Image 1 (tube, rainbow, N blue to C red):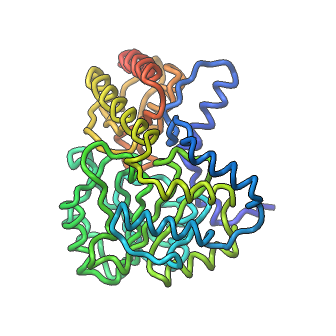
Image 2: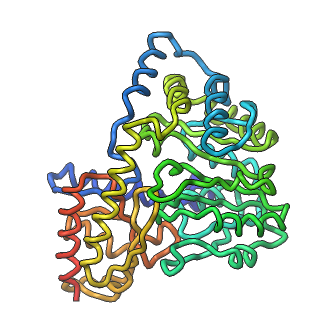
Image 3: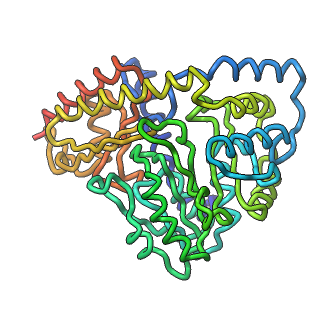
Length: 400
């Protein structure tokens, strides 16, 4: 008897988590695997945040919190949004969740009915399309390749919107590409969205603090859009707090209330200790936090190093991303080549080959909507990056 639902059968496993699992399995067998597949800063959480968590334990913040989060935390997030983004939200318009992924899921499930179209610029983060499918919506992909720096144009966006469009899921800085939309690029997209008031906007800004040139702009900062944008962010990337599992959504009151309603039935409030620690994180500006600045500087240096190393590998083509901690090189020059009797047909085959031959774990671009590319995370040491790229170079040279 097959008891599984169509819902779970139609859902893909997260490719990033799958590759990380494979890497760990090979490591457990004694192989020296360099894992460049994981989307997690390799830095520790700043000390002042850890101290806040310890105080919370000592002060017995160990009971159920309010479903949308502690009032003090939502006030701190509202303060952060005003300080960093010039956005005015009341604490009641903010819902704290168990990671930004739950914030995204809450919002999608609150908005999307069966058959509703959801515009997703591609390449996209792996979970976007699965969340839309879970809500029985219809993903509409708008593709921007490496020649566009992986950023869609206003003309492309306009062509993708129909009367059936309910939502656009937008991400800048981007996972997997690291691309960052400039203020003027966002302004042009905002002009298109302003002409289509039936479309709601979900703006994923989780990599906001990891930008190497310029400053982050939120789509919610455009007055014509503010009342139909939900901003999703969290502490995982910018504060190196992935394991603390805390994200948040800020948006129109009706959306916040809907997300609160869903969360009340699904998980209730997120971890109390994480919430108390996040209060201190939100209240300190990133430019005043030496650990965060050191992390961004390290990522910038690693990006520059990797771009130099990739440039030495014939066949790999890469843009110059301005944020996050990923490179997304085009690798289709290697498709159709062989290693012995093994034919490399696509990025999935190439990633498996590099894992088995070079013992380096990457993620195929097909997981992100672009099968011509591979995602490289540089959230590891420079020595590991140099060694990984040397291994990749040697392995790719063996393909004929």
